[in-house]
Image (tube, rainbow, N blue to C red):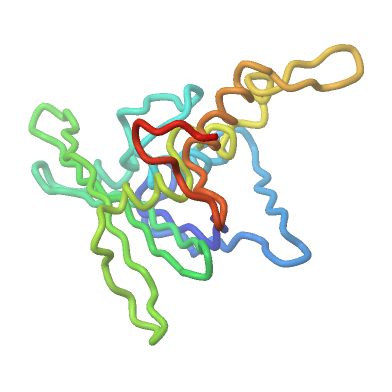
Length: 205
């Protein structure tokens, strides 16, 4: 999976629609987001995991409050407000557009009610047209990058000690977590070309 860009709409600190944030590629393939505390760096990290898996990190404060506070106060009571994240990515020479969306409204008691989020996917064809897949979007995502592995790819840099333990001079892998990740990778990896699975009940020589 190669991430191309992300765009947010009324998601936490981000009021309205953000510009499309393109991620670095090619020789310069590192993207750095720099900002003060509260500027939205952790929100941006969680936008990736939310749109892909509807999952939020442990450090994400008030996970039940996704909608931008300003926009929900600006609309009339009972009016629904759209909150979504759009992610473009590429995998095995195919381009994907992924969008997770939910709605929220404020009742007369000033309580915010949320709808269930919905996930939408489009895939670019060779003719350039975008069409929905025949499979469920979450099935495609989990085949590309299983949800059980996402924390090894999307994590808070300040909490990297969950994956690596530090001693006086070096970092060493947290063996239990790395072993768990390796087992998932082995279970989801396709068989090598030319290999055949033994029939059920048979014994390989």
